[in-house]
Image 1 (cartoon, chains in turn brown, cyan):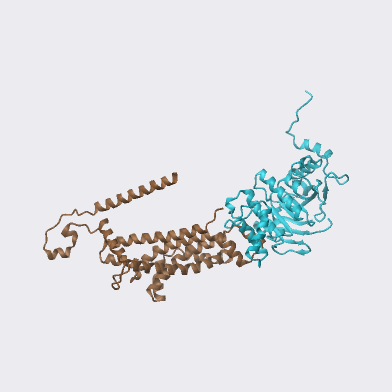
Image 2: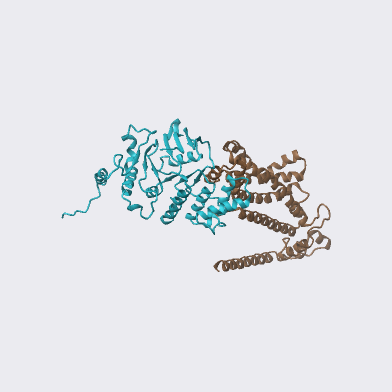
Length: 280
Length: 310
């Protein structure tokens, strides 16, 4: 009873905050500047700010109208610089998905090996510690030079940035499986492979999934920046392109969509994490 | 000792200490058990009881010596020796049935699912958990968890059971019921059992033989005490048996004083021929009423008896 009422009240507060934010935004970008009189040719050059006193910053109504346009036609393709937002988001999600899956395929088996072998763990530790703090974008020139394909380079950047949290969490999760569970498997003469799948994997799964959740967040952060550099397609390129078009409305819409997709990706991983978490 | 089913022969355990020195937990430990015998080890923390149990289980290897079970030297763990862990060690992501079935399918790898399930179910019924098969360990009380641990150990029909303080984390009532269950099951199945405990009464109730270990490091097996109580003893009238207090006092005296001083006071102690103590049997008696009475008075100088004369 108290939880539902708390939820209800929290929801109400959220709505009030949103309304207040939209209201302030709306008021802040109202046309206030004096309108100068000028010749029509000059006015064309000056844009709406000078001729109608309208702020270059769009209001919530403009953004909503533009967003509605995008939502109605998400997949149109009018050439390289004019594609629907659905297509742009699709490119970004595909890149993140590919790089991320490759990272999963490498990080989890490797993490298992490192976690189960103290020798490997100590031998590889300096490399991991050195490589981990490198900004993924710093790899970009090297990737472009060696791979010679901007799209694959972006995938590589996603791969390299999402591998570390998964790798480290897998190592930690595998190495800190409770000794007694291992001993149970040992007294039952369970072989190494079966032990890895029936004891270590379920025991480490919550930690591994937490690493995967951190990784997907980082990958989604990095893809925007990577696509700004790489260009061509993707939501990051869209943001930069609309900045060059001076379409602040589209930039705001892109920001909103980046947030929504990031949230959804995080929620999907959170759901998986809950599925493998066990109460003790 | 007519038949040595389990024979621990001169095992030692040493750990590398600081500065090249080695810490010896125990060395030259000899111990044997007959088939179907229930043995308890009592000693203070740090005397290496758990290490002995782990070596018996195969989870740990001795630095020296060997363990022979049923005529064969052991190397590593075996499905013949089931362990009941102090912390129950259930896999929390599996249900009660899943935990027992994991052990069953580890022993009989080619059994189909239905057969594994049926076999696991009989042992869940045996420990009185019928109806809780699909609960997860987190939904069970401490006593129920340990019952699952017992069911899991029994389900692989081992040659012997190794128990590391299995009931120490339970409340007194639950502990009592589980002791009854374990005793019943062991008597019914003729199971050989090796149990570590801190609870003197638990040892007296369950054990046929009680091994007394001195304090570590450098712990030795000081005495083997044979339980003089009848085999059909019950937990409720245990303390009424005429030999109960003699036995209890002997063990407690050992734990309180002799476990510290034993090594110094008994220079001729032969670890291969540890004295067997028969409480209450004339001629072989070591601890008796006449000897322990004055000792009790001197060992508690602060305790004044109520004066009856004034």
